[in-house]
Image (cartoon, rainbow, N blue to C red; front, top):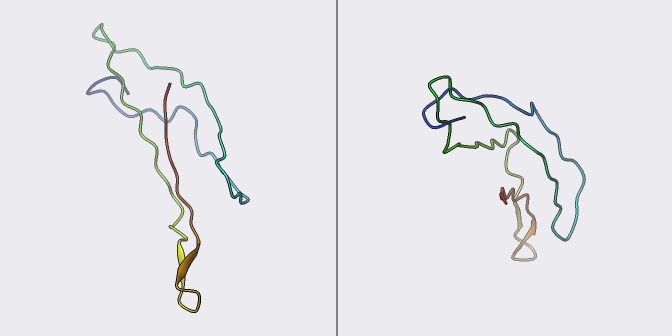
Length: 75
């Protein structure tokens, strides 16, 4: 959204499945909305995780045996 404007669902729901022991990168180009009043910048981007966290602590091994971190970055 442009600063103070309404949120726009530009990409819809995106699903990631599977597992990896290293980073997984996925990129998307997001069309930036225009502010009807003129200037649009700065924009705000919101990423929402809809699935529950699946971090699991294995008491017999005294360690976390799975994790599901989500990291958002921009360039």
